[in-house]
Length: 121
Length: 139
Image (tube, rainbow over all chains, first blue to last red; front, side, top):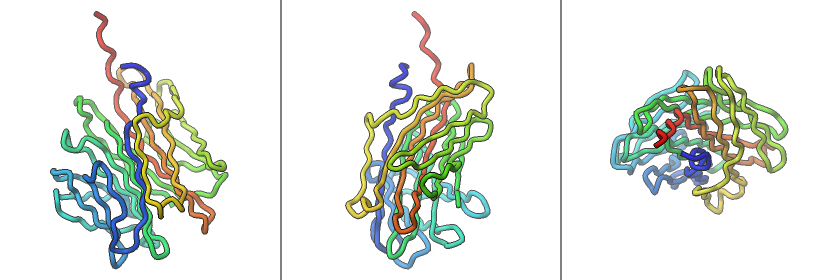
């Protein structure tokens, strides 16, 4: 494997904003869709990858694991002293979902803003 | 406030891999630690105008070989019109650390969002670490 191939970057970076209740962002070909909660306090992640996925998010008490069942919306609570922030990883799950995903979301005044990355091993 | 996650994951070739994610909101000009992987590396960043300066500290026993920005080859970066008010930015960085069979390839994607009302920039990153594939046998 040559140097250029070794360091080639093929991942996505997606940025989105949304009012409460609206879609925030989607990535991996719509495999992961993130929506802002209508009532605040969490985001909803829809896993459309076709397989159950494992995710982990940061809390003040350390990392917390959660399963994202296929085709089922999962609410993930925002964290931090202000209750308005989330850093979450979705882990690769074989050929059906080979990428790692990092999702960062914050609740701002009247809107949510999020940024997400993908990258394969 | 900083949040970091570090997860071991198997690579498709059966070797070990690691995904490290972090995010921090910082003021321009301030150097801050963004990611740390114990006994491997530490990544600091500093916002300078429209640029992100990166500092890689080698915490391994082997050598560090930095390849800087690897550009946008094959990359997709999208944002909605409304998100553009946060001036999203992207930078990519690649480096090798360690030695011998423990030589590791680290590919980092860094994203930025400007919060003008607070005078801060949120810097987030994902680092994917895996063992360097063995060189093909000479034939």
